[in-house]
Length: 116
Image 1: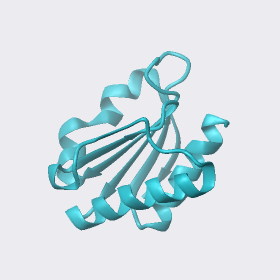
Image 2: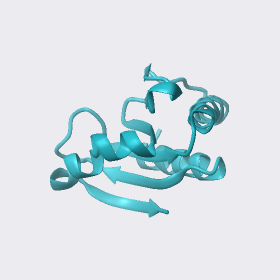
Image 3: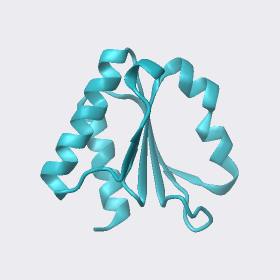
Image 4: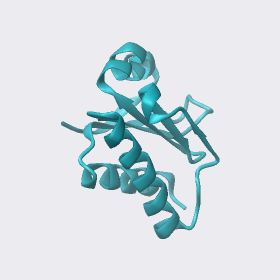
């Protein structure tokens, strides 16, 4: 599976579920942890849960795969879905500002897509 195509599909699924401030970051060639980050924001614990559940379901249907790992809970404000080459970060607004992954990775990545 092509990791860019997979990442773009994840972006589409997140957008369909009304995620906010969706960002697709290309970490290649410098990062070894993943090729791409998909970062998005939900406006409530309920939406964070809906986003993470829907992403898992749609990827299982479309690509017949599950995340290698899932970290965090909607109540914590950060859910991470690790699909190997693509890592999805679903944040509350507060946690996204606090962790500032965009700023942390700015020097070694490029933004391929930004949806407000």
